[in-house]
Image (tube, rainbow, N blue to C red):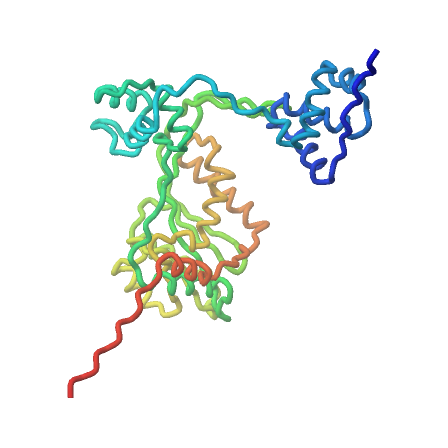
Length: 373
């Protein structure tokens, strides 16, 4: 009687062993692939086929198959070969038609193409295709008509990077004897209260809240940050106009010791650049101003505090009235100032300017023609 065939010997390099262990650990690995990797690892450890089959809950024939395939083809041998499947109903021209429609202007009265809309549109033009097929074609091409990413076109300002660098240099090297103040307004803060109380979080369950809410109006504030200390002063305003802003500047003038100069960093809002504001600043030479470039409000450091205020209070806060909202903003500001620290500003605008020049190379200057004799 012929003896049984000897099991194929498996020897793993460090690279192959590491790859097999990654397959076993990865949560995204298909279970059939994990089983095959475990078979190979056990075989490399010297286990017999019968012992591997008992330990992994499969047949000896399965162990032999994948042990042999790995020995012949390595890790690629553990993956299933592509199958022919049903022949394609729609060829490349139909796929191109789907993509052409999905990337064209949507029909009148709609803002985007849907899978069903694409199928109907092509059906009216003699190409019968289902909405599911249109969805598969879009998925393969990674075309997503329902998705949109916002972007901001920077104003055509030739001095943009020079002005951005000026702001950054002030943050990095504030002038001696000067209080650097970042100032701006945050308008239209909604005072909303939920109709039903929130259910607090439990272990294993997030907090829950009802979608319905009651509006109680809006509140606007003007705030200023001392860049050197990180401390903030915020004040509720009834209107966002020049007179309101001038009163706030006058308050800063009274609060800050008179021997210190005041340097303001602010955006180009109408209340900041109005004739009345410019006249008041000219009458108070103690103040100097640096404006952030247009479409660059992120350079204004007070925006960092507005972000903290939004995340920690406004986004999930419950406010029964505008006065309640104002009181909670005041309480938040007082608590914030107890542990206030200056922001660590490291951006100097030079790297951004260099990247801009790489993407938008400037034309070479045209040499002047020699003057005629």
